[in-house]
Length: 426
Image (cartoon, rainbow, N blue to C red; front, side, top):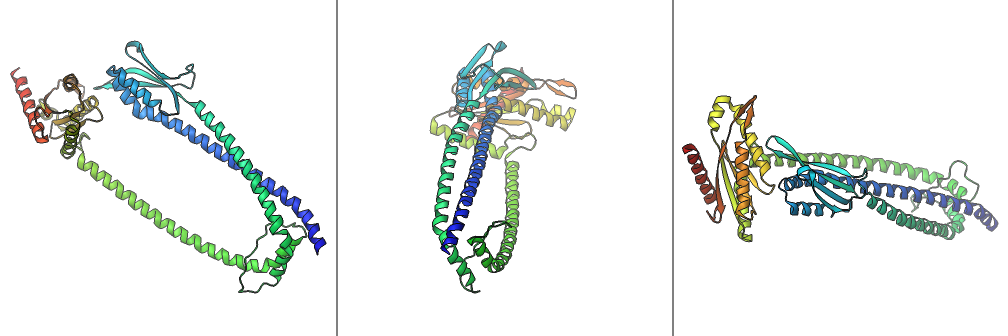
């Protein structure tokens, strides 16, 4: 018996070593390839996302700053872009004939990697290109990270494969080979109902004649019964998991519909259905918050109340569709003048309110006031007819004119009606 064990070990050992090394190498190569590929695609996706963020979020701010020739704000925005590791340099060209240039970072030799974004400013119904933004994706960073990961992962995986192979061989040699005959005897003495841990051997149809073959023949009967029981149990578990997954998906769909309904109700409750602007409810909330921030930070808040002149005659003459189009047109014009932090609301048929925060000086207030007046007086086209329109604007300033929301709106309303009376006298 000792000679048989020694003879079979001399055939089993080399085969086991070869298979362990082959499987370990295949798993190592596959895991390295998969991991590096996923990391590379993730980095490229992050770089594309960084470029999308520039196009969707940074370009509007850059366009406004370029339109206003605010060089400090342009430099600040471009510096913020380069905080992303996925950009190596950006350049902004603006002004008359793009004679003003701001470059931050390294653009290289302006090769094909450069992405170009036009800055389009919408002035009423007119679109004007005020400049171009050039951005160079940091592809070198992607290559550097991929190289570092490849080096680290390759070293770690190779070391892991070698250690696991050595440990597995030592365990098999120490714990399995010398106990094969004892396990075969235990299998022959198997009694149904006694505690038993089954052993599964997947060796194929041409297994060699050694102790493992003898063990496989001894455990076939018991293993067959246990396998059938396991198959039934596994089928029941799959059925249970399927039912749980269906119920979970149903609950997820119900929750999603509830969230969508809540969001839609909130939008309807806080927005004007015609212009999409804030309604009176949302205006009151934002004005109260603006006044609270102004008190804490000792800043001013400006409230503009805008009324469209001769709206009723236009509505009566050309119809309600024309009146709605005029309201939407004027709302869009005013919305493009204001900042994202400002609030523009429609509170009546042809009345609008703008809440402006963080305006440093009267020159800024005058600039916004004049821009609103120009936008409101820009001719409006309806069914091929160019119609002259205008608006009256009343202004109130916190805390100079009033220290409450109602007082500011009242002062702005009085100033607006004074502007209307002055226009009629003129």
